[in-house]
Length: 416
Image 1 (cartoon, rainbow, N blue to C red):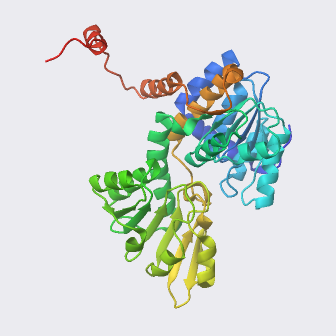
Image 2: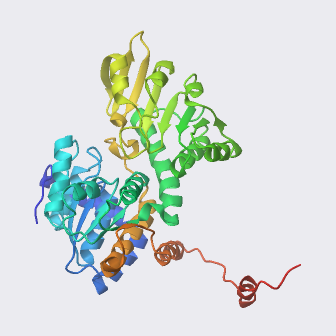
Image 3: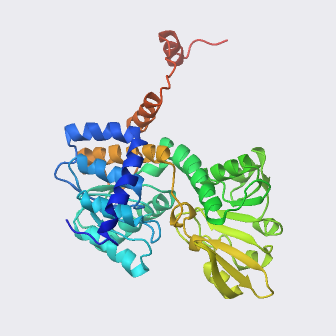
């Protein structure tokens, strides 16, 4: 086992955080008990690039319980919890991550995971898979991808014929997309925003840029907290959906006139640009809920500013020429994880997502050789099993179809 972490003496505090997360992730606990008996990953090396925090640690230890050797790097330079990284090393996981990595350190740590010669990989955002391909693929049998951004990159690779092994798009599974993306990101983003700024959401004019699954959740939760919510979209169908959901739908140029809080959730590039920054009101808060720090044009923000200062931890003030102030949270990175006081998605949400990851990896362990290189869906039986386990462990019972109902649905003869 090799490792590169900040300080191993932080391990006791990290162990307590992991234990707390484990107690609130019952679906993954059920899978871990099964893995301990069947050992489906015995003899396999798993390399992962994920947010190194307590919920991820529960996944890593589940894979280890299943017989895998696990190597882990961060997927964001600011999201690693150093105490959790130390605790994982003490549990026998090779960890290469610390909070505040430089870009050079970040990619060096990905290469350290690659140097451990993984058979299977789990990625969050696509950087590990991209780095693997730039270094020849290294004999990887298959992988899983956690995010919309990562899946988009994989599909671009597939379209060019450049993806060399099968990857399961865990992000696109209904149990992940509907609950993690929509509810998990919504709660964790708004929680982080309030925690970092100590500002009230109720009564504020909140602008949500993007109305995909993430944007839908943020807009809904912000309205539930009493915000006046505007949605900005480029897609006509999503814009119409937002309007019928009761939100104001405007162009970003129009929204800049009175918006007080701007949250980007598009997975795209420079959706808030110089022309928008110039039009924003004094005191506007900017934050990003997308995977990479490219949704807000940070270079334009710096160029327009004559002075910068950190007014609170992870809250940077940019004073523009003329005196207007704009406030950027967590350096424009993923606000629900990159802030020092940000905690990421609720444990109950990541219980579902990481259960999908564990079972998808088990599926790859037995089937990767039969899958073509490219992007694959989560097998429906895995998605269904995770949902059923969650309902069962929550004490929720499903209604059962009668045989008469099943026969009716199979038949085409019965009409009016």
